[in-house]
Length: 132
Image 1 (tube, helix red, strand yellow):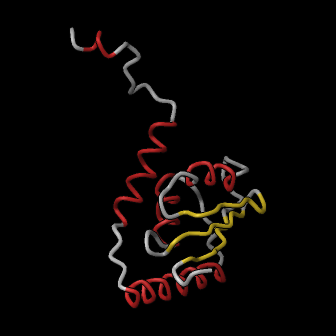
Image 2 (image 1 turned 180 degrees about the horizontal axis):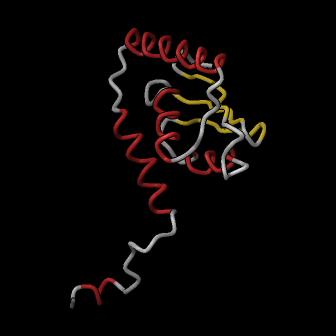
């Protein structure tokens, strides 16, 4: 595994309307640049392999939280997150990666918006939209 490639576990809370958050999160993250592999271990556990030059675990978890997923916040997992955040930010600074986190986060939100069922789409053909 190259130095900038990381493999981490993301644990979700059991107290959520979606009983299979890991599968839902996997579908949402699968086309994001920088994510190399996703594997559902348990309905509340998702293993993710990603390239640190493009995004970090903190970026992934923050995006999942903003979209509505509930992460497991037990003491041991919060300590692990803090340690991963520190080591990844230090490693990123040491290898000199100048990644743009906003692009990866933006791609996640755009992808989720396009897949979400809502009333913000104009169902008319594009040539009809010009007349109104």
